[in-house]
Image (cartoon, rainbow, N blue to C red; front, top):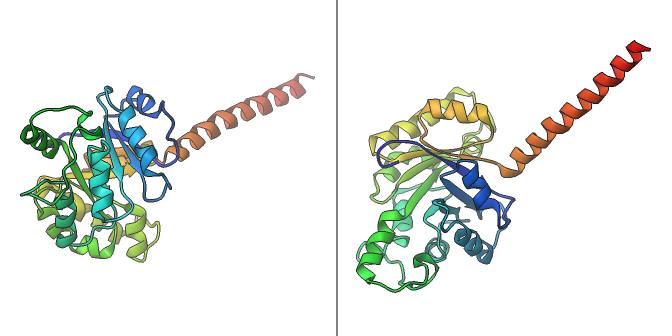
Length: 259
């Protein structure tokens, strides 16, 4: 992403079983993004999911419920390598988010070493801090009219790595719920991508299916997560079950004609 290339992964709202990280990796995911805003997941479960990504060359990230230090810093202590924060609306908010991910003098994150984030290992603290700062990926979601208005000020903040389009919420706050072909919404999409490129930030999106994925790659988004996980499973099941029913119905019809 730092080179302007693409990264593809998966976002999970419903499925948090031990095999999920390996399944995502086998599917080609480079990262997994676990939701805490809408999914009702707890902190202990998130710690387990981050640990299950270890050794898989799979980057664990999490969307925290809100802009609070104790959500952001705590998730990093537990092993998350990326933080997504919903409804970011101002430069001050973006600065607070980044500061929560950085140790002094760059921020005010409290020190906890020899814990989950560094695999309970010893070592030089200065080297650890540098490595943690380098790897931590900070995502600001642009999903309100205010956030869209201030997107450039948000993108300017040093330490913000990604502007992530929250498409459903953005249309809601713009007064055009789910109107994803509305010219106002499409102009907003263009603005977010252009701002990300201007300030060398990644542009992120969650795609529900192949059509959405293709369209938003074309829009210029370069980090895309598949999701909703429940929807992907439901759609795959629906196609399979529907196909079997069609086959059975066709067979019955052919049998009647044969008679």
